[in-house]
Image 1 (cartoon, rainbow, N blue to C red):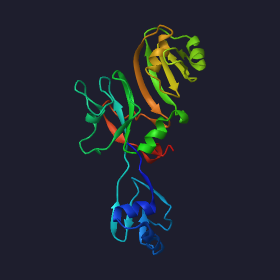
Image 2 (image 1 turned 90 degrees about the vertical axis):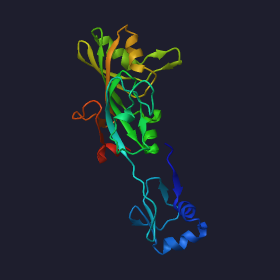
Image 3 (image 1 turned 180 degrees about the horizontal axis):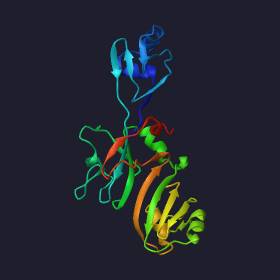
Image 4 (image 1 turned 90 degrees about the horizontal axis):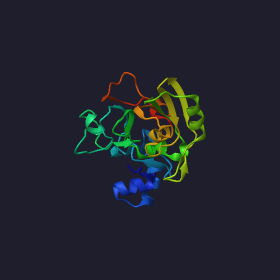
Length: 234
């Protein structure tokens, strides 16, 4: 979703269909409130979630929504699909209709999926320049060795895209289990990285994006709104 941000005078002018020159005296008279606070600056920026009131007339009152969902295996990160259940179909019936998916997971990958109607927030969270850490629990077909740790730290060259992956962190949790932290999201990246060792990924489960950790109380298919601390990552 595209974030819509406007100068306050332009926003009010468009909503009330009046010239912008009429906005300054309205602000000076204290007739405009933004998010419950009297607004005086016509250059103030408002977005699609700002609560804007002129006199007793509400010009806009939209709410931002941020949701975490525990995606099961076999569910697709899409709004519609003819063959598989989508994450949207797992949400409660009274969920907002304008949500979009933040950072998709493959059909056979489970774990944390985020949904929101705040385009600015989702772009920040997924922007390559932010290098937001994403953590995955990985189950492998063959045992791990310390050589994996060094290789993940150095990065892997992917010839098809002509890129070298950013340094990643690998922590060995057991003979065939690892915790992997990525700072980017290339196509099938984790499977391809382990593929260099000819070690098949048997299960892949995302547990965290930044400071947002999958709630252990959420069963596969369940969801809940993010807390204020979780949504205030930026």
